Amino acid sequence: MTAGSSKPERRPDGAALVIAAILAGLAAIIFWQTSQMRLPPIQQRVGPTVFPYVIASGLVLLAIGTVVSAMRGSFPERSKDDYTPIFWIVGGLIGQILLLSTAGFSIGTGVLFAFTAKAFGRGPLWQTIPIGTVFAFAVWFIFAKGLQLSLPAGALERLLTTGTPF
Image 1 (spheres, rainbow, N blue to C red):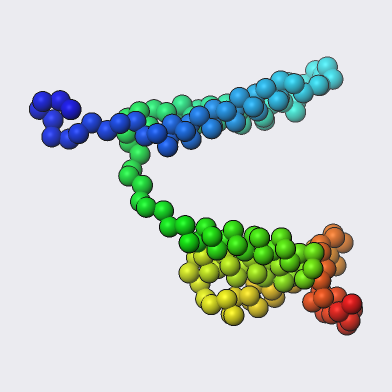
Image 2: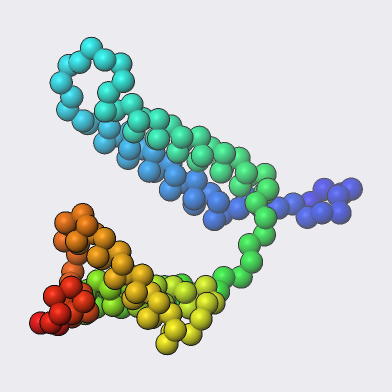
């Protein structure tokens, strides 16, 4: 602290420096992996390595900017984290993973939808689970029947498409 200053000096933001290190690490991995690509000799200047190098360069620039901002102390003070919404979303993901193979896509994804809605402060579960299940069934129907892609089918999907849940 200087003698004439009324503001205390801010230390570099440690969290921002960690983020900058992660960005630089990702850039280094992309540069290294791209340099290891085996390419046939071609005459074109734009090949499959151009965009990974562009992305890695952008990550390096972001890392540098983050370090500069961290050293200046220009990041705003962070508020205290509330972990309850994170637990709801993680719980929904775990529920979906557990339900996909047994209950099917619609019910599993409906649970994920409801838990995520609860994390964002929307509606009770008894209301959001059916809404999410209806939306998820529409997605399942479009993908499974319209696009002929394979998504896990449970009793609900079999009941509504074939008339029998088994």
